[in-house]
Amino acid sequence: MIRRSAVRPVSDSSNPHQLTLWNSHRMILVTGGLGFIGSHTVRALLDHGYPCLVTQHRSTDVPDFLLDHLDAHAVFASVDVTNRSQVLALGDDHPIDGVVHFVGALSADPFRDMRDATAALANVLEAAHTWQVKRVLVASAIGVYGLPRDPRPLNEESFVLLAGNPHSIVAQKKVAEIYAEFVASSLGMECVVLRIAGIYGPRYRGMRTFVSRLAHAVARTQPLDLTGVRFGAGPDDGGDWCYVKDCARGIALLQTAPTLRHRIYNVGSGTVTRNREFAAAVPDSVPGASVAAMKSDDMPPTVAALDIDRLREDTGYMPHFDATTGLLDYVAWLRSGNPY
Image (tube, rainbow, N blue to C red; front, side):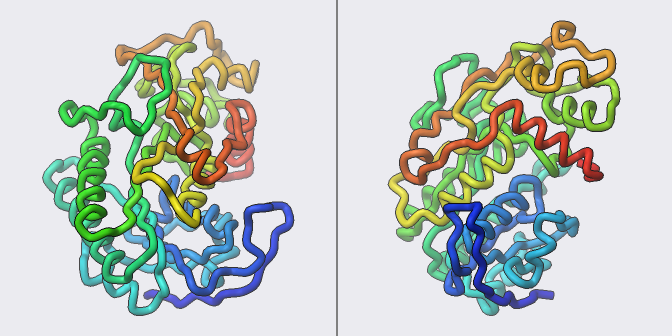
């Protein structure tokens, strides 16, 4: 069931970027808005004074930081975004004027993933064109750059290799970038691609990264198990690790900026963070753990950061969290009773 939203005036003097009144004429559709990055992006958009329409399909887990806004500023719609008619119908009940598209597909069947990811993107772009929205943001990932060992920051003009897609999501993101550019050029729509860094923090379920394993070990006072960690488990392995609240704020700024000068933006911390920096934030907090004893896996370390000059120049974005403050905030979230 789709519920209409009420628009109420709000004010938050602690957030200088927040609007003093809710924008009753602009609602942002966030597909996959109950996911890891999506849910934080919804919160960031709400903090900027924009009500959100959030699609939910398989996931029904609404985080506490959105519950207070349920029905007032955040409307949840049970929609399968691979269903064209369901997506188009969203515009019948809501004044949608912006879209952030996160939905991807990940199963054991690559053909199903291809069909679902492509259908979801096509439906969302068609709906956005029908509704004449101002801007569509399409989530991509740092993985489109491959696994560089060059420490120089990757800018949006860096080479993207079409061949060699080790993961379904990376392949989908590359295809999504091509389709978004095609639609933007063909129809004159503002479709903006977000190349998102490695993200960590509350609501990350994967447990595939060093920082997530470390945060859970500290919060639960358990031994640090690095078996099967992706992207390297050694002290000098690292990359552009961005705290999810910073990432979400950057995305919200891109969606709400009056004008944007580019069609592709990197979203990340802009710096390389190595595993030893995360470990140094919680010394002696993990039983039996020693950063010196950590070993690299067989994958070459990803050490390059994203160049975020475009994002900074066009929105004023600056990360608020570093390795220490981000990890400690993450641990505090887990210690407060949240399972992930």
